Length: 416
Image (cartoon, rainbow, N blue to C red; front, side):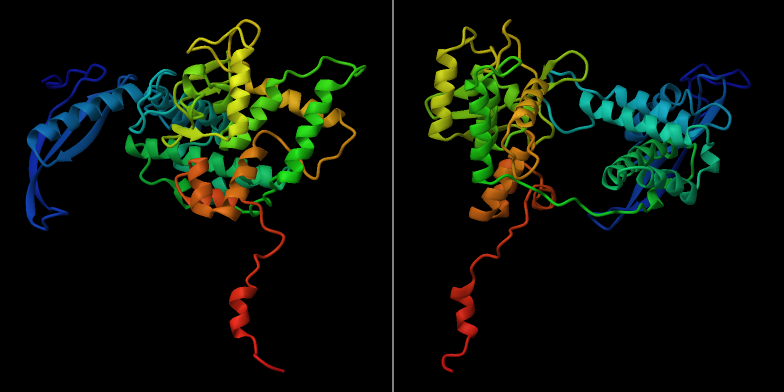
């Protein structure tokens, strides 16, 4: 074992190891069991030595934990190990740690400690905002009031609802970065855990109903048939993508990622097996937003007929070809549909009753299913982990209370 005498420890090299035993009450059996504890130290990249302690139910498990802790401290503590580390240093180390957990775009495993490239990019974006506000502050100088004041400035400095959302996400990444610093021993406690931010509430959900959807369909079709209108005509994939989103409640990235191998024209059905990522070069990711993203949906006869016509009229009909191809057979980008839809709406003389974007179709599906089949069905269709997300963000409030007179008549008087 390395680290004898006064010789300096190399990076990742363990120092003197002290073993001790202690007893602990087993959570299941409620009996005392013997645990092994190791106290040691490890060489850091800046030449310093960091002490640490691990414990486990067996000597083998404790030794493995000690080796893992030493590797973690020596490889991830480069920025934090400097004297008086700052918030920016904490984010540098934490993001390096998360970068190693990003799974490949074709990796199909779910759960565990892996994260998607999208998630990492969101972490990086909000970390940049926090660093702008708190980057130079030393970790030892952080306090709950200071963090609250800086994050609250995001809420009061612009759009209240958008600012509150940004502040909330900044608090989340700051807490994770500081948890990382606590785990590595550079903070005793995480002040971000006690931060409470102003909440302006949740914006009212507005979902298009059947009348609004039919009006939008008529607007899109009119744009296809218009003559003498300046500018290129939109691609028919706009309306086809709309119908698939309305038929499934899927996200636009999931719909645009569909391949012919994901489509069963006989049932008819579509299987959501991935999504398209547009940050950087457009790429297909073989997993969705969450563990619940994998799903197979039966579709309406109308959409089934539409899919048959799409396949009959495309030169790209092999199993791995996209159902929404570009002229070169690549996946068409979700942003192309968003832009086309926005242009059609802006240039139309018809006024829609509400703002409609691709995400509006998920709200339309959720609201309709909740009204006809219940909140559980709506949540299941959108593949949410629980019904609270569905109700809070996707269900439009009914303007008219459901008719309860058949039940309430029992409380009414029978005579004058």
